[in-house]
Image 1 (cartoon, rainbow, N blue to C red):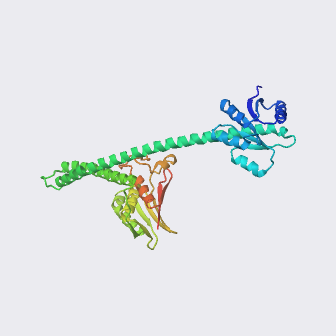
Image 2 (image 1 turned 60 degrees about the horizontal axis):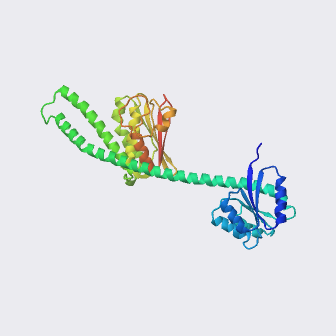
Image 3 (image 1 turned 45 degrees about the vertical axis):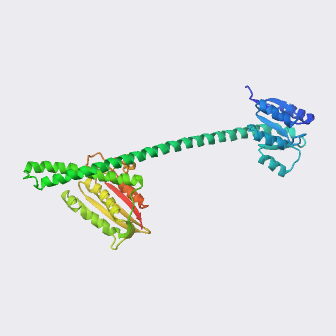
Amino acid sequence: MTKEKIKILHVEDNQTDALIVKKRLQKDNSFDYEITHVVSGEDALLSLEKNAYNIVLLDYNLPKKGGLEILEEINKKNIEVPVVMVTGQGDEIVAAQLIKEGALDYLPKRENYEDAVPFMIRKTIVEFRAKSERERLQKEIALRKEELEKTNAKLMELDRMKSDFVANVVHELRTPLTIIKGNLDNIDKGFAGDVQPKQKEILGDIFRVINRLSRLVNDLLDLSKIESGKMKLSKENLDIVELAGDAVKTFETLASSKQIGLVKEFPGKPVMINADRDKLTQVFINLMGNAVKFTDKGNVTVKIADLQGEAQVEIQDTGPGIPPDQADKIFDKFVRVVAEKKEGTGLGLPIAKDIVVLHKGRIRVESEPGKGSRFIFIIPK
């Protein structure tokens, strides 16, 4: 097997010591050593500028410029090479200073110190290569981080432009929709002449479409406000039990028409929280609306628990449930994970989540296909 060639610059003014180290390395089979010997620091610097070495063995005591000065010059010139300082000082303070100044290691020049040279070379080269690889990876990570930050900034700007565009389009849609709905309402009430039964039926279909578009417009407006950070909370002290009761009443007629039950499991006393009444009502409406919409038999149950420093709300249905692999997508925008086609914008749950998070609360879903879903949200008091 071909041995790796290791180029060594040995800076030693004592010819005898240099020869001893050379002979010891010739007996070592770890590498194919190529040794360049110089006797002064000045010669060492000239050689380092012209040639590449794997390691430098640098004597601490040199004529004119000492080893420490040469080490400083190597660092100033940004010469990437591991330096082992060979010193006869035997002083820990000196050793610490050498390491501080950039020596990768040091070797005390004691009796038979040459026997430690092969081991020191192997150890130093391994450490230097590991250090160089760490620095390379750190630079690569820093570069990738910078690239990711730039890409993220561009994506955020595109997202902001998208949100602004959606908000502008929605505002433009709102006015004509209001006018259309108002005119249709006038026609339906007979202000433009008698309305025949067939015309009433057609108007009813149009109203359903207009109302759906209006809901979409309102949801998109809420979403754009949340994404742009423009949705502000008007907090007040309120009883979440009372708020939930009012929300349940809103769905009594629809639940009755579907012959499903609305069950309330509320504490016997008020549960006071500090929250935005209108926004929290919207959370109840969105969650209960889904529960009633997807339940064709059984009950929709609303539970409230008074916790330490928090209020917990559970809205449970007996609908089709959510497949386990799709439960994590339930709060994504425009995603409807149930197979059955139901009318809706796909924004109710994302908006509910954003409002809960805006209150510094938490929301999650627990579901099993065929056994219904349970949405749980928690609001700090």
